[in-house]
Image: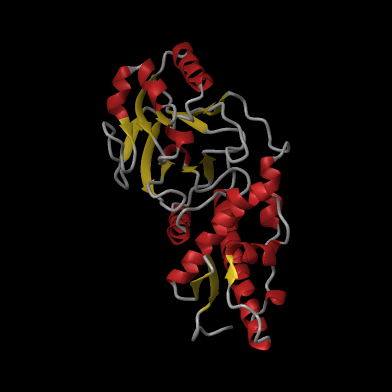
Length: 314
């Protein structure tokens, strides 16, 4: 029988996450030729959740390049991009957006202001008006870069990764970061997407935030293990509360989300609680509820979670 005491809490998650927000982050140049066919242009928007800022990428070896993501709309990003395009006499053939979040799409207006013809060459899953849809498996090609779209929802409902065939590399968007772990909207879909990303057998990962991932299979495995460990720790906290309730008739039934977090992690900074820990805990609880392992009830205006009756405890 599992109890909270004998389920190992993945404390490395918090160590990695907090480290990723601090001054230990490695420096990334504003513009860098990462390889002969990949140029990284930083979005100019470093922050707690953006790490060194949003990575945007120019792909290819000829005059025409594919652009992945557009940053947040910070003016310095378009200045950096235009400078590299003009210095090297390059132009953009396609603009591919990994997902709808503002730190990936915010630079679109500046891009179109620079070159109005690009308005017809912007591609996104669930496109905004005037944009083009991306189909799963769709291919985009320029000299030196053949890019296949991969539908990988979870972090966002429209999330796409992009596989660069020439390098056996995957542009992971926000599904997998260069440091720490990402925030997830739909955990069940996200775990399926991580499996699908692993099936591509790419060695290198280019994340939308952080350094290039040199061993993508290992990083994907780390992400999957971390999510599963958190699922077990949350279930164990609810189980421990259930067993205590059976021993103490006066014990209140169920735990609030914040009580679950406190039971597992103790006291943590309020900002970290609200921005990352609590939302990810709620998402895991929802997934457990979808599989009927846990349930919830409203008590005095608070959502309280509990182990469902009839669930076999192992």
